[in-house]
Length: 257
Image (cartoon, rainbow, N blue to C red; front, side, top):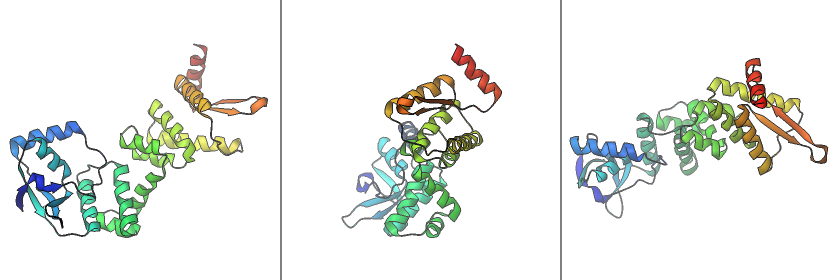
């Protein structure tokens, strides 16, 4: 371990975090001002001179905020794939990554370095099944992935929503958030959603923006999933899902009010 000027370090190309909370950075900066940097950051030397961060970007940024001129580092000579793996490992061990960030980092190991699921799992100390499940999150609608990143819903909710066609996932996620459904309740919602589709013997068709807006407004007003089926000149159907007689009674009361 040694100490180097903080301005000789540049951010790492393989940082898996997509965002950092400013408030927590300020708290860490205040701690560093009082106690110094307790754990050194990990860097590697660059061809052009200076250092590239491998792990510890929050400590590096907080040290800058704290006004430090130097920072303790551990210098390692590692390849690009090892640098990404080390960055992932540190953030996973510190539980600093949300599931989407972790999945994106794992996908980079596969895409940029040609790793298999098993090799990626071994490099970050996870089981192959855990890696495969995380990667499936990337198949979600981007809006749903953003909800997971912002902790509006959990990874378990996302896994349940994967069973729906991607076109239906964002709408179902809105219902999950509005009604504050548990993961188990979300799984039940998905089963009923799919059962309703099979019963109607039709594949979900993309709705126009006005119909989607009206469905969302009605769902929010009634506190239940609402589906509008347009049949052109023949009219259509308004479908309201409920899971119990008590819930049905609540919907009726809202309709009457």
